[in-house]
Image (cartoon, rainbow, N blue to C red; front, side, top):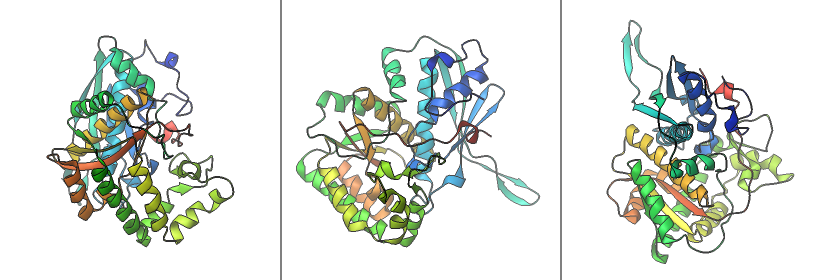
Length: 348
């Protein structure tokens, strides 16, 4: 497989004269830069001849936050779209066969075959369009930005373009407009913060993915990504695990929601693993288009993660279907990207 650090990508390294398998393997270097819940990176790749498999890595599941693996599958969908656009940038046409995990019977009972979510093959195609090239160039620039964004509103033309990108992947993007809608959604975010932080199981799970910024860790959320710096960073996992910090987080997130230049809900017509995979691809497409327009993004998914609040998010979206995540976009300060696992850890 291709060697080198996950963020250290040079387009000149693409194996132009290589086999389809070598080209697919190179594109995985871009796929792993996709966003994921808690930066858990719950994907794994397998090459069989000239066919690439994208598999869900359930060992990286978040059973408290995400008991149905909905966000896990969406994370894999984000990696899938990032892979697709990287292949197009090199003049390849990807064929994606989306699959659902299946079970087979053996003499010892039921076992689950590898969690294959998609199989991808490629053939030569036309050069990338200008839009595809823009999305590709945004891949290494895009990363989650949890800082406060500059005041203002995102222009209507760009909002429409982002909604179109979501629709291209079978999803919808509903901007939350008007003070009343923003306040209602901000209230749900704050309520979800308080409920999640009051749950010791949630705090323990979150703390397992928070670290002080250790260089050896290739996943999770370093303290600097949460706005915690200096000596306090060393205490971040302990604080997350031990104390009920919900009220403070609720107040901060309420302000972030109400002050977001663009606050939007991304959803799908259905609510099943196939729809979650589509939602993840739509998410990656929206985030890359936003990044190409110099917007940063982050998430306020808390109310979608609690079933009794998710229905109320759906009412605010006022769209047919199911909300999958809450997205905030705007112009933010420069921030350091979160780490990625070494490439040899994402192959099997």
